[in-house]
Length: 150
Ligand SMILES: [Zn+2]
Image (cartoon, rainbow, N blue to C red):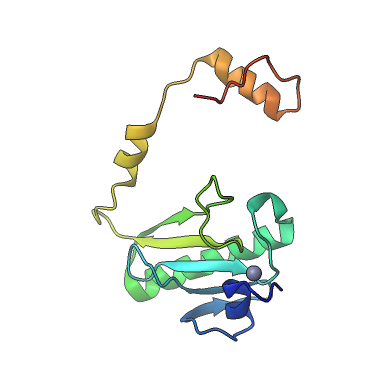
């Protein structure tokens, strides 16, 4: 536990939160900044900062409880789908530095517009560029210039 971490305080129940569910390894509570009613955060009980810091047990715990949250959202709120977000690191626009999974309940035609947002930012990639990046990720030799720099 990190004394200064608000999510650790929520896990320890020393800070207020609107709790939704709890398991042995994770806690779920409503975000104070929902983009849809019922928007829930799922955090591992152990203080883990970013995605690369997380072990299999923390990841399993947040996804398993996230699935339970989705079932509860569908049952109680009538949602018919979910969008999950997990921001990791400053560059990933993580806001609270205790790993957290957003479970956003979705309804058909709810207008969130994620697909159009995504499509506006998609770039086509040539096969040789994809292969170069994949080689780096497999642990191969780095090329002279980074294939992921824009
Ligand atoms: Zn924490």
